[in-house]
Image (cartoon, rainbow, N blue to C red; front, top):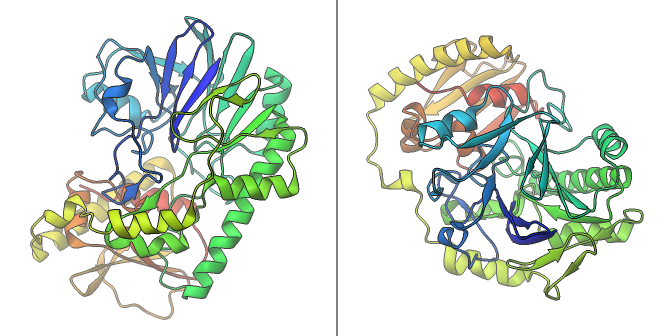
Length: 424
């Protein structure tokens, strides 16, 4: 079995008899409401993959399932996890894809020379307490010709899950393990100073790198590849790149090499490189990323990007406030359905006025007596899209489009899950 790397979490597994399985195609800049871009810039185009034999989609986020360019033959098998609430499955049905191959948690299915096992989220959240947490991610164990690969993508393993996988499935040849904390923290949190943002950036990366290391030491694959969550922000939000909870795969590999991952070898690939999964040998010598060139590329090529919502007219303030009131009520109903609750008071700034949207809607007093408080602000044009379901709150957060002020600076996972339900 071979693995051809494309970028971020996208790649193609090539079976021992040549069957091709494409994973998580994000091939065009501008996901997460316009801000996420590849570095290095991709040479591949969506049409380059139309001839693959099947597609695996790990979850609904657009850096794994980019609806804009997802245009495959409707008869082509698409593998995905059968796990409620099945948002991805519902979306694909709406797009006319009915040849879905759904696999339940830890169920194994054969496809030509491939053996494919899918896994539901290994934890609600790997680092924080959460009643609900992760609703959408999956991971895939694929084997062919005597070698195997675990594509964890954004479904971060716990050490306990790694131990169980090792005991149940034996040695994994290649482990593609997530190392980044893609999202708004700390870059979008204005309760932090610049120095505090930089300190949190470093802390989060060290935490994630060490977690990956512990998972690798427990799973004991032959080869480990830092994988997924690789991006830069383009457009007017590009200044936030300095404070993202992310790093290049080179930086992660260097950190791991300095501390060791047991007997596992480290693998790094560039776009188009093909890895022999069993031997860990690539068809090209690896060329390290150039951080200076990355910064030049952001300022030279990505600075002028306009986000889709920036072309919209400013919405009516009266209607936006009225619909925000309705959306706040619907959010509370949906929170009840999923068993979500928060002790935070949540306020949203609209046209220079703050409105409380949780626990009740109304003009926000900003009372200093609020023990826990989260204030949100985003472009009113993007909010209009979110309310109308033309955009999605979680995508706006991950894309860096929402600014936060949080007191105290404590992460409530379930509250951020709840905000995904803020729409009409």
